[in-house]
Length: 529
Image (cartoon, rainbow, N blue to C red):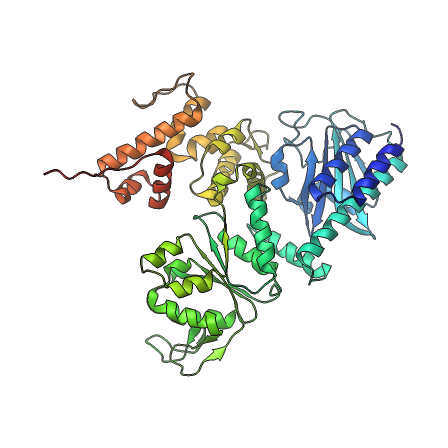
């Protein structure tokens, strides 16, 4: 193995001083590393508290970028993180490999192979790792120490530059320690990170970054399950109020006669059952953020009082004559079209305009096709830790089926489906390596269309009369035809009643309407004399 060439060294140095965005910088770094040290896979990971987050990779399945590795659960990562010099594992090492089943160059479990990890240190502090894997045993044994030292130093410098730029752009008012703590806190909570690199997600992240710097009231809109609460939490964490409270209120879950008390508080004896003074959510959130989820469900009678609180930051507890001032930033969310609600007289126009100082629209999963693999990887790693198993991997072609489904339940539906499939995979695991199979994920979990896709993954079964599969029709068209038939039959059986049809199909009516519109289904009513 030769020393690192001067041309490679110069190429790395130019990358560090150039204006490349992080993604390009990391890709060029990994490409240069592979030119210097031939290998089948190389991964750059950033340390975030007790976790490692993949930032860039070559040679591993794309869903690996969505995974978050708990250092304590991976012995190889533990050894690398505890070292100040490169760690080379014996080809016959019995320590479990965190990338088992993820290497593109091989299917199934990893065979005997070479593995090496370089701790990336900056001023003596571990900020990340660089890992290299080769299917050729002992291929890293003769690499000169000087070569590894240069690769480690350059990789650490590149990673440090990227992390510093991110901190300057996103958290200029916070010092590095505060940012690290907030990031760690966000990641240890389920759904604590906005996952995705699609154009619409990058736009959303930019919008969040912009409005987070202000105290503007924000209205987050989007379909059920897209992650509106996550966007609100991210807004709070990136704002100057991040050290203050974030108070959550589900407006749809509050009885109408208690909403005012819940928001503004009440005095003892104000109404039956008010046995003591109680502070409302506005008071509790003083100095922080109040998140009003499902804001479209608030009754008109309460909307006027909420408007006053937004305008003047003054609230009045139920049963109290005096008002008092609070300092609260309002973030609201809804899956309704509030503009239409205003036109229908169900929502106050002045409150609507007060809430939409900065509107944020969260895209549905069907518009984020390139994010599905990342999200699947993120969720499968979460459920792997919860189930306490060593590794879960997708069987071949699962990604294809995931991309063909339109996900009416959005990210939440994907998460729940991954969890159920992982649980089924655990119960049918072979040699302690569960495989989330096409049958687990598609046939069982995608409801009605599962009957159709089942024919692809199992011996031929009798098909419904109206379904005909031929070489000329693809799986997507066949699936849509089957959905179209089911919906049309349900509407016919229920005399065109959409609510009744939705109950028959065991689907939310709003999702049924969207699916029917996409499939070109409509009901035409006629009047006969």
